[in-house]
Image (cartoon, rainbow, N blue to C red; front, side, top):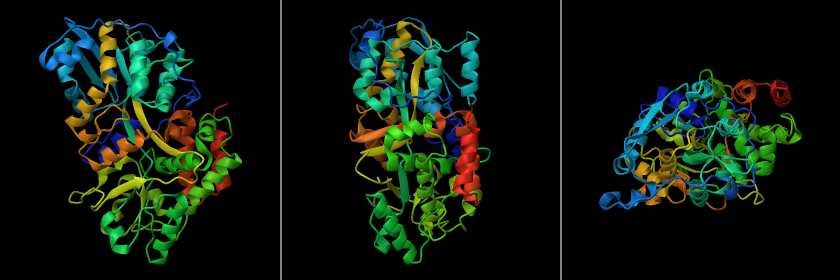
Length: 471
């Protein structure tokens, strides 16, 4: 997720382009990494391996006083390259205007929907940007291991380690060396519902997976088909079904097995993966549960993901699993709030063994140039002050930076997402298919899950995905 691909798909179905993160902001869902993402296997950064900070702090006064620690520069420009297009791209630029004015650093921002392929070409051709906002841990780690990325300084590493959980930090750490702080975040582990209709029918939000299944059974007994879903997304059709697999894997077998699965340390048709698919099938292929307000089980494959949850608005559906960015797809006139027409709850856990699993995505601010002004920009974007500044510019953006002011959020789903993403009891994992090789994560995993919805057996589905894994 990649989230960057996702938000482009969102734009096609909504005037609002939501967040960047794990997919970032320019396209369909995943896209597969390079298979090098090691999850949280790293022991974290070793400060002794990080270069010393080159920033020379100065004393500033007035509104610029907080910016003295980033230094003062004359005619300094830092180029920044990203997949995050407008309107989010403009929101980012608005968020650092005062930093530019006070430090004298001009951030020359460029967004590109073809970021993934283009940034590789730029780097290989010796035309790398000073800073790249990378939404895929696998791509970051590939640049790091090839020696292209500049390691984060000790000051930047400490700032990031103070502001994010170790799970987030590990994704930008390679062989004990840290390369870039997180930026935006997106939360997938949500189930949407209608507080209005829950109150009308006497339903309560479940806090465990078993409770959610019992609630689904009660809804079905009451004459409702509780779940609605859609996985159609053009050439990316199938990605929402892969999210179901990832969420259930985290809850059924925990983050360690999740990492093994993502890195192909267990085969795709392993018994554990079979168990996960069977658990997903208890909901998505249950004719008593789906596809509420839309059709039968097979209609999930032909329903656009943007429209998959809309029957909740009119009470034709009760539950819809989808990420925080789905808020952009609700029709106008519906109140999104804990006591409103629409809201979401944390997708419940299956046991107490694995704490509170959280799946999502985000971006990392990485550097290809070793200059003090480049470090200054990175350091500022790693701060709670910048995250708060971005939150205040416009809703629809979330940070997992625990120093960000949560009171600055005005959107209830943004606030809920931030609370979950910074929960100290949570265990965070990036969207799994984004870290898998492209042949799988953005290929066979999508297509075979679609065939599974259309009636293909569990065994054939997993065997075909396993056979597609590059040797």
